Amino acid sequence: MTDQFETRLAAVLRADAERAVRAIDAVEIATAARSATTRRALPGLDGGRVLGQSFRTAAALLLLLLALAASIWLVASGIVRTRPIVDASPSDSPTPGDLAANATSAWLADIPDGIVFDGNPNAGRMALIVGAGQTAAIDLVGRTTGLLRSTFTTLNIGEVRLTTDTASSGAVSIGGSPFEVCRPGDAGSYQSTTSPDGSLLTLELLNDDCRARGAVFARTWTRSLTVPNGGGTGVVDGFDPLFMVELPPGGYVVASSADHRTIYQDLPELQFLAFKDPQGFLDPCDLSKGRRSIAPGADHVVAYFQQLAGFTVDSVVELTVDGYRAVRLVVHADEDASCPDDRLWEWQPKAEPVSGSAWFVHPGVTDSLIIVDHPAGTVMFELLPAPNPREAEVIGSIRFLDELPTTP
Image (cartoon, rainbow, N blue to C red):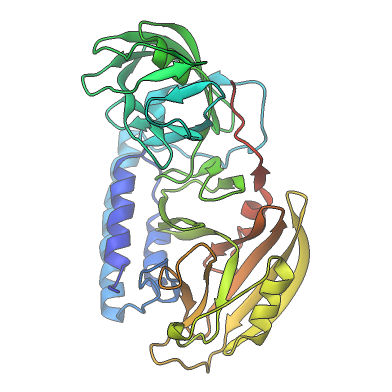
């Protein structure tokens, strides 16, 4: 494992270059950089390693200077915009949308019965991938990518014109009848609208030379938060059950592994973590001793931590998340807990190989875990740094989905 501060900072800066400019708070950035000593680890990464004080100070000063310069330029240019936290409530009153305003985004839809992509008869979900160079293409989740690739321009309010580019591919059948593959230069027009909270994008077919593209693109799509994003409302599809959540505005990147997603930004630090069916360890100091099985249900997760050496349960509070019974478990690693590498290993998802990604804390670090009893399994959330003042707001926005809110 290597020190991940520089790596994660570079990832955030790359994501920032691909999203709309937002206001910069230099003091907030410097403070976040200086507080990096309590950062939790991401899966398989040494994000919990304590940074040297001289490096933290230098990094904070450099970030402060860069942020001050950027803030002055942005204000002078008149392009700083503040964006309130969006309304996560669904609405039946969409507004004109612009694909160009959603550069480097992904929109999900379940593949309707009757639509079959050549060579992928059992694909269940597809993603509309909008690229920074004003491109749009279809990915079959976990399968083929770059289907029906097109460039686009925006015309009138909400109107989008798509043109098949030379790299396009993808044969589509509907009801057993194959559609002709799109040819380079085939053009189509669509009316684009989005829901007020930005979570739904609807493309209405006006006309299209390529019938296959029209059959696939023309529907309602749900915004995905499992790609670099600017916060707001979207769906997390790392495992079953799907769920919607609203994150504060920011600049987020994503880490993922089996039955796990972490959506995070470093400056200011905020991490939203989601897991399914967490399993424990027999010895928090020694992963080689194996995993401790945790039966489904929040109570069993609580019982695991109550017996785990080196940890103290601070509180267990009953609550509900989207109508499902849940508990908020606050637990900390004891200050005097001792492991050879200063790490106390806590859990990994059941679907993760024992030798795969796992999560640890250092002595003295607190976890605030929201554990939900869901029919699909035990779902566990955490907002870091913990305890977090935004926890109730973010967890309260979670809505579990049986299927994506799409149109046939």
